[in-house]
Image (cartoon, rainbow, N blue to C red):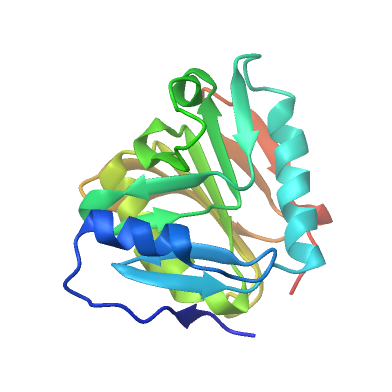
Length: 197
């Protein structure tokens, strides 16, 4: 199953898009996101996808402060880029979420310290192009892209130093390489255990 776009008026404003996003009825496990102003439904990720997310999450839990969290289904917004995304992992101080009411369904992407996306066949362009541009625009300090479908074999790329809509590549490698996340994490992730696509 590939991603599909929910039909709506492309001239609609942010509040209208969010209302459509909130009302979109998708099968259990599917991700409903707003990408470049389009409400998009993507299929649930496969087991290998979850194994990678879990491996990264376990490693991050060894280094994050007690008052930080790692969230797998937290929606983050970048209204100025017409984006509302559900990354595979969001690392953020709990204080950024404490202020939210029970009815609020997303936080500003800029509240995140690290966002991790793991590509699926249905999300390649979005994870490689649209989402990093939006995350950089929002000022997310670190973006980790695990690209299981890269030409030449699976890769992992750490982006940082956001400026406007662009990140600088801090480190890149193939599955099997180690990737070092800088402060405030100061942790190495061994990708040798990641299942390939």
